[in-house]
Every structure is written in structure tokens, then in C-alpha cells.
Image (cartoon, rainbow, N blue to C red):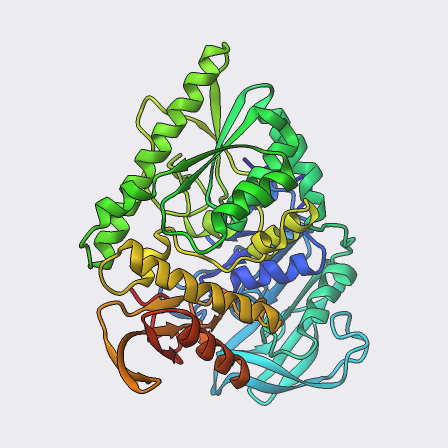
Length: 524
């Protein structure tokens, strides 16, 4: 369901890792953006009525076999277009410029010199700056009608523009934070060259989506699987704002949650939204199935299969109750985000339940049409919408939490006793990082119990053989790569002291300082 009324800036993805980042930076400039594949024909792009097009980075060389090219017809449409790195070179080539190997590659921070003071994209910016480069080839001659506006040692044409036609480009990556004034360069293209008014914000989403949901759902009933995470919480709140008590949320307590999370959903979230909530306590059922299981993948499969069965039973009850009043439940809410849509090839997939458990679909007799109010948004935009809807900040800013919950953060078999130990240790970590004001600087902080490991310690006059706890604080923008978060030593000291003093069975706290790659974020 695409309902956004704003004309988009299309980010053409040539296979670069930065396409999503470009789209986010455009939105940070208060302009709506969408990502499209480089294989999309120009006429299909035009059908989206774009206000501008941005050509992303991509493969190493425009001359490589099978390298994607730009259809020159794009530049005759009158749609303002901006090329970045590979997109810049492909643009130059399509318009009759010259691209060649220089023998001088530039990767990483590179000094850039602006050679044309009247440049639109460099207007008001310093003549010299440091930018982020990633190229082997370079544009040697700009296409006819273009003004060369910047150079580097390895790029005799590091930027060019033809403002009369609304065309410009740069060899460097303005979307990367390492490029000084990179966001300003993007904004100058959007505002000055393309003439776009910065009117889009995530606040627009609420009114737009409420209207769209009402048009889609009408007076029919809606069901939502609520996990407690920010995506499902915001999606449900938006739908509730649109249809009120025609929405029923189902919250499954599988016994693998962190301390206070059930109460947060049952009490705080319901109080903030007024949502009709059905809580299913299935913790005994999950723990019975997990008894003695140590393989992490087997844990995931058991939890995923059982979750869908429990949700299915709850959904049948909601459907039956609706039927007794002569109503039907026709819609299912999912918290699908824009990166999910892009990574799945544009969202033309199945109507499977896409819950926090990544489980399969519902049976044939429980088929719903999907309502996906967040499918145009990135994670940071979802959080902004959540705040505007008045959701509890603990939910809005909750760190990502895996569907299998604490089960995969116990290395070893899962038991009620081990869950209680890990739950208390995790609660201390969350409390201390929040008190220190660093919890929003950390993208995720798994707390892991090495349940099958006994480590020697000493407390009082005796030796102990307790379990180690592993702290895994990581920082990431995309979840594909991550680095360990540099937490203050005094904070780590407080966490260690509290866990070893307050949590029985734990006598050692360790810190994981491995990046991803090579390490994963979860231990399992």
C-alpha cells in the first residue's frame, strides 16, 4: 500500500551499499525519497512523477562487463538529476563525457578543491574541504554544456553542473558523514538546482496514514500481533488512531521477555493509546517445548513455530467473537519498514505474517489483507512518529530485541531459573546505561548468560563457581556492520559490581569487543 502524497526524489540504486543512506539523507533534508533499481525503465520512473532523480554509487567501473548504465533518455525528460560516484561517471558517459582509468585511485578521506566560486552546489561552502572518495576511474572531460566545479588529485573532474538543465554530479559521497559539508551539497542540489521545497517530515505521515487506513479498512475489523517493539507498537497506534476499537491487538507472553516488558505493553502502552489488547500467557507452553534444547537454531524453530500457533489460536478467538456480533476480521497489521520493502525486491512478496519472530504464514482459513502503515519509513522516522503519537519513550527507544527473546541469549538449555538470572542481569544493564545517558548512543546491547560455563571466583572467604555474563554493546547504522560501543570505564565498573553483588550465580562479567564482521551481534 503506497499512500504517500508527496512527489518523490528517486534514488536509483546501482548496487551501492549507500543507496539507503542517500535516501535517508534526502529525507533529513525534509524531502521525500524512494529507492528504485537501476533496471527500472525511464518511463516507469516518470510514472512515479519524481521531483528529482539521484544516481547512486555502484560497481567499481562503468567499463566492467555487465556494469549497469544510465539510459540517456533520462536527461531529456526535464527531471533534475544528480550523480554520485559511479552514478556521476555513468551520467558523464551517457551525456558524451569521457571516463577513464587514472592510475590514481582515491579511497577514503580526500582533499577537494572548489574551482568555480559561482557553483550552485558549492555555494557558500569553503573552497577546500575533505570528502569521502571510493573510485578507480575518473571523469576526464565533462559533457558539453557542463561547468567543472571541483577537482581532486585523482579526479580532474570531481564535480560538474549544468543548472540550466537541472543536472549536476560529484565524484565523492556527500551522503557519508566523513564528507565535510556533504549534507549541504545534497541540499543545494535539492533546493537550488532542483527547486524543491523542503516540506516533508515524518509528522506528515500520521495524518496521511490515518486517512489512507480509513480508506482501506472502512468499518471492517483489524487484528495486530503486538511484540512490544517499536515497529509493531507504532503501526498499531497509527491504525488505532484511524479505526479505534475496530482494532484488536494480541500480545503473546512467551516467558522469554526482559524484565518489565509485559507490564510495559499491558499497562503503559494501553494507557497511552487506549488500544483493545488481548494478552496470551503461553510461557509454560514455550518452556516445556524448550526443555533440554541447547542448539540455537532449534530454539529459534521451536519458538517461531509455537508463536504462530499461539497467535493463530488467539486470532481464531478474535474472529469468533467478531462473528458472534455479525462482523468479520479482514485485516492484519504488520510493522513492515521501508528497508524491508527494498531488500525484498520492492514489497511484491507474500502476505505472510512478518512478526518479530520471522515466522511463516497463517493457515488458509485465516487469511487477512495487510495493513502496513510504516512501509515508507526508516527506523529513525518510525521512532519520530512514535514520539508524536505519545507512546512511552521506553518503547519508542527500545533496543532491537530478537524474536526468540532471552532464549538465544542463554548459551545452553533454557530453564525458568536461568531466565530469571539473565533477566535480572539484563535489567541492571539497562538501568545503568539509561542512568548514564548512553542508552541512545548504543544501537543494541545483548546481555548473554554462559549457562554451560562455570567460572571460578572468590566471594568472602570462599571460592565460587558461578556463571559468566557477557556484555555485547554495539553501534551500527545499518545492522549489516557494527562496532563495539566504547562505554565509560566507570559505567562498566558499576554494572559489573551490581551484577556480581545482586544476581545469584553470577561471579564474572566480561565485555565483548569484537566488531561485525567477524563476530555476529548475538552470541547464540
